[in-house]
Amino acid sequence: MDRGATFSPGAAWRVAWPIAMVAIGIAVLVVVATVMDAAGASDDTATAVATFVGSGVILLGGLLLVRALPPAQRRVAIATKGRLWPGIGLGLAVGLGCVVASGAIIATGAEIDPNAKRALDDLDVSVGVTWWQIMLTVIALVIFAPLGEELLFRGLELRGLVRLMPFAVAAPLSGIIFTAAHLDAYLVWPRALALILVGWVLAWIYRWRGLVGSVVAHGTVNAVAAIALIAQA
Image 1: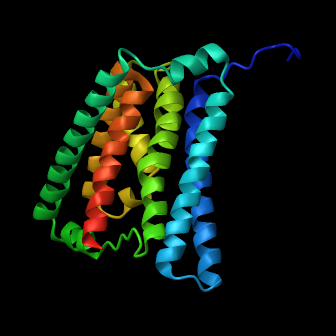
Image 2 (image 1 turned 60 degrees about the horizontal axis):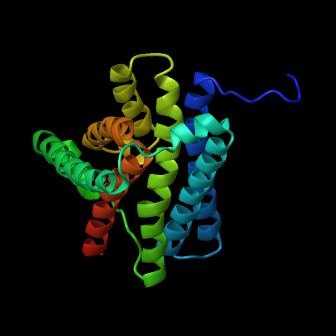
């Protein structure tokens, strides 16, 4: 390659690297949690710190990968389509709609499958008990995760898929890939269906309103989940 040549990532690069970056973030999360546990930290402390660090790594990876794009492609990947505030409002509304739809899917799955209900009841998800544990977890869930995952799965991966297939096919496929990157999707099957739906919807709002719309919608879903976890603590 000529020294003055411009790096122009293809579809495979855009699809593969976001998946790899999430795998790296999860690996870092596991390592941090294991080290803190070995050092005698409480489960809540280890979980809060590991979640914060792992989500931060994914966000950093998303920023670096998008930064690697040529300037014109980078601007398109992170662009806001339409006016800012209507896009934010739509993101909030869509996020709340995703919460309702996801809740209905999970509740229906638990109703028709006793094993799924038991698995949901056995899930032990905690945001911590001290103010700083809760703060780290909320920042990870509501800020780091939406920004990092939307950069990776919409700004890079979805845009890579649409180079290979029509958007109507790329959107649900991106939802499946998005779901596969979430560990909790493997624990209870209704969670996987709900995440596929959310990923599909986020693909459409990204196409319509750009990164701001999908980040706000994603952040709204996670914020509602964080509030529910805090209320249960």
